Length: 290
Length: 220
Image (cartoon, rainbow over all chains, first blue to last red; front, side, top):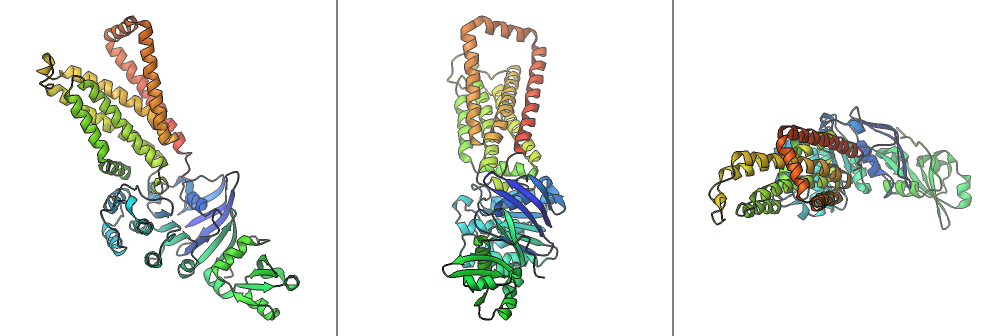
């Protein structure tokens, strides 16, 4: 669905160099600290920004040359941009019907009602949650094949977030669909996504399946002397603490068996992001266990 | 392209204030002895409003979301030129038809109070309006695409300076220059018209190419 091969973009103070794929039938998350390059990557995928070098392909077409037909197969939403704010929900539907021949007005209004979006209120008067829900409803209502969603649940309460996640799960019930989503919410990612790419400082630091992170990853608490004895092979990140290190490993069981005295906890997505971003060293081209 | 046209028409529907101002302009000038000038002015204001939709699309908060929708940047530029030329031209056609068929306001002095402008005069003024529409579009749209809202101020400054320069020339040369020019146009009216059309077409073509060049470089 999406293939980025050494796609680079240089802004002087920031350099992006990304290689990643989003296969058909998967929900892929992109996570990372603020300013790490997530939005820039999304903008390149959607043809909003031209890369300096590399190859970006979306649905088989070069990302910078997406034609009408290909764009109709994509639904997109950005957390910091919305439809023209002088329009209301009905007018957004009228506009979308003009752009997308496959736009399903019944589905759109049915989802809008489900999300409690008022028909006649202008977007500029919407709350953050309403605006976010409208964007996702609009993105799915023209039956796209691919969704590219930049922080679709940012700033939302639990109920609104769950409503959007349910909508995305329904979208994935149709074979051949894919989603690329960025999020800071590890619970959302864990419940929705198949795999994740961790991006930091413009580069992909890790690509792993969500299942593997839950079952195999761990965080080792070690003193400096203990850390020196560890086998480096499955260590991904190391962050100094007051009395030693917090160390991220992709093989918790291996270290638990061979260094039984060391406290090793299961890692979650937040641990992975925090430790990889703050680490003294990075492991390049980390691949999924499966 | 259909989606872009619908989006712009929706924008118009939701900007009632701008439509009200235009309608008020038309009514006011229709009741005055400067209605031809008023209709010309209304056409140019309509161009400015449509250029405003381009700047809003390129620079506003909705720009990133808008450009994910299924149109190419080339189609975007083409639609903007179409609306900036066709819609004001339509407005002008309606207004100058009214000028031809409707009598002037009864409280105005003189023979013109009894009759409307004749068709040949109305047609001539409509052609002048078209030239103004083309000129304003050719200058204003690339500036709007390149500089966003700031482009409209640059355009206003450019036109203000052009009018100032023309006024300065006329003031300096007196009636002789203007008289000579008017005489030349009258004697060679067909040639003047063709030359004017060629120049405007060339200007429009260059403007379109520049707009395309700039829109391709915009990062949303």
